[in-house]
Image (cartoon, rainbow, N blue to C red; front, top):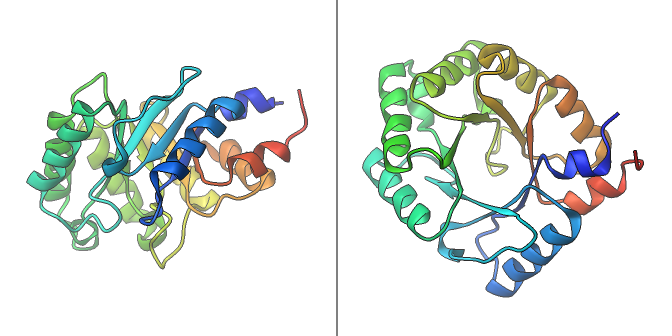
Length: 219
């Protein structure tokens, strides 16, 4: 049985609303330290920040559409790392996935990987709700070939929806433990969070971190 602390250490405590203010980011950082989350995830324009309590800093790249040039994503990622990001969550170009242009998709991811080399953690957002099962598998395989550390379900902004247990399970089966799996988008309670973990999620992107953790029994 996972404890609150265990689950907290799987959470990227997230604030990606475009209207988010510096004061709201400061409040996010304070809450992350209080809750013991693994990281905060904020927009690149909010960097740099100084979290406390060992909290890592994640940011996004090509967010939320993914439909920008790879060179722009790479430049964005490189600047974010310079400004203190420990992790980068990039959005794939969904057109590549929908047309089966897997070499182009791999190159898109690789451009960001090269701009933000390890030990920076690279998570690849595939917008699983917008893809077929076969496309999910192929996108995860492209992310692995390109050197990503995680595959991630969703931005939380796509009209097709966010994370699903089925998508997380398929993604976890595809990467076979070689990459992490981040479930993000629409996870607002403990029951849903635990279902994602059971399906294979190793990280959770949450804006409702307190509500999720409050719903867990201490263990």
